[in-house]
Length: 496
Ligand code: 2AM
Image 1: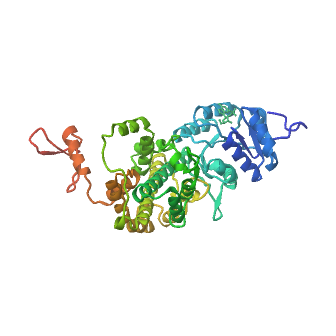
Image 2: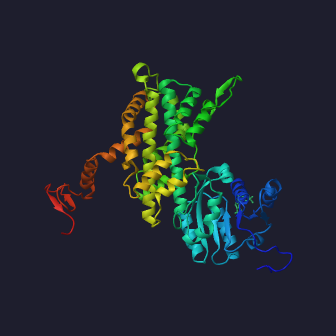
Image 3: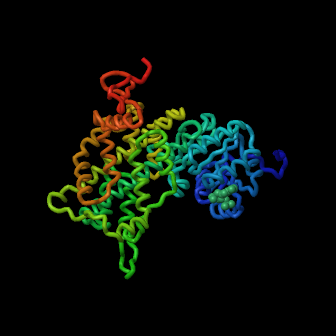
């Protein structure tokens, strides 16, 4: 360790350090410094440190370092070091370099979009060395990182005591409450961030379906639809995603002949993904939680991205059917409002499923995640920020053990009131040949959840016939198998 008493060494005085100073890391570092925290800086390529100091050095108290060792030495204990590098191998490489320089009780924070399984592994490995590892979700993109993200930190409770106040100070606040709270042990923070991103996929897909329905079904222009979304943004749907939808639909660029064309008509209709939506669905499958809204959204992006296949189908011209068409008269009447209601109901379902998934993950890994608190910290800073999340918070405040968000009085009534519109919209879309996987699967989920009997009884019968998988009976306890290839009688399979 450096001699802290020597005149040339300023001593460990930084409150927090950030390494990995690409745009997210740089903006977080500036946010820390702007909020009065002495912020240590290190980056593998020195120029990023120099640029930050040159451009933004007057925003706060920065302690730049040219090597990892002095970076570590510049931090007060317990050291709080935020790693902002690409998820995966780079994160492991930086951790491996850092760990030998740290001392017991120091806190390593991964603010990237790591898979929660990686976070669990890293937390275990660092715990064995007496170090804290905090995997934290940081939502809000570059802008949020600078001006106030939503922050979802996992890890030990002890680490949150030393780290929480700093993170809460840079998070955005809504109604005076910071959008940052302790999520739970090891991978909980990154798990919740993953589900947040999954819900974001579902929300965006539903909005895109509403747009398509009104465009293809009513023949409205993007500019007209921008107005529709702006109006919706004044009601229950008020959210960042609805707001930016209006902005995108309003935007024009010069087309081939120089005249303004709606940007949305110039953009290639193949949606990409970075992978957190896919992770959510993979994990949901493993946990056995029906997050159909997120799954449909991920698959809808995949279908849009199957460009060659779509081209082949169009070139062949053999897959016939309606392709939209203008609703008129009674059919058109009230359709805009009906789509709004269908969007809202489908959104409630997608969020209910997302919160079910958080509960399932929490049960599986023993995290004890507070769902109402998650709704609270998503109210600001992040992409799914919305008025609506206050309702979810209120629902869990009233009953933290709600079997489904749909059972909350407010949401049950909202979905109940919307359902005539919801059914009308899905039926219309089906008739017009407009794909609405999000709207229709949300409705099917709703109907599936509330039905007393499901076709699953038949599935159990089939499974028993071809694989002797057995079934339970409604009229008596036990596990049964029918001797399908024998005399057709039934045997009780469990010990009794
Ligand atoms: P660089 O500026 O030296 O490329 C995003 O890529 C950030 O993560 C950048 O600041 C980058 O540093 C850093 N980074 C990526 N891989 C890294 C590694 N293996 N070790 C250290 N920093 C890394």
